[in-house]
Image (cartoon, rainbow, N blue to C red; front, side, top):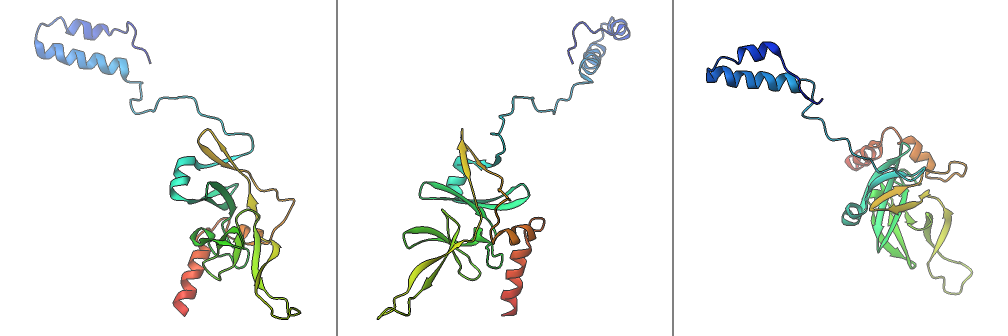
Length: 205
């Protein structure tokens, strides 16, 4: 609110008294008359950067690069975003096997691919494609040697977009289903259940 030429006649008449105390009192009274409707604690209203259409802002590029990983909600779904060897990767945060917290897993290079290893049961998932990997042998070989093989895409991957220092994740296309969808839905409104489950199982051992 602009004070302009706001003037209170009662204040004016009382300030004719040359007494200094009265003069100071009048100044304070004028201040509160002028600014009584102004919220001194309100932040300035600047322009807000609009997010790209359909994308969900999950964090700042530099912050994620420094932390290497974050978890975020995308349309209510918990997603883990990794920054590994110069690339961003986003997956459902709960392992397709039994809902283990992938954000607590270790990233390992397996068969030439960066993979996240679930901390619960050591299931291996590729960061690029969401494939589940396992070591298998061909019993028909003269000397069977374990080799990494694919179970197919098990974990839902989310597209990551970096724009103007911000990191965005695309909402999931639910017209296509993946094994990890079950646990993503299960923990959608209770993200700490899987962690509690792990704690309870460890206590029972």
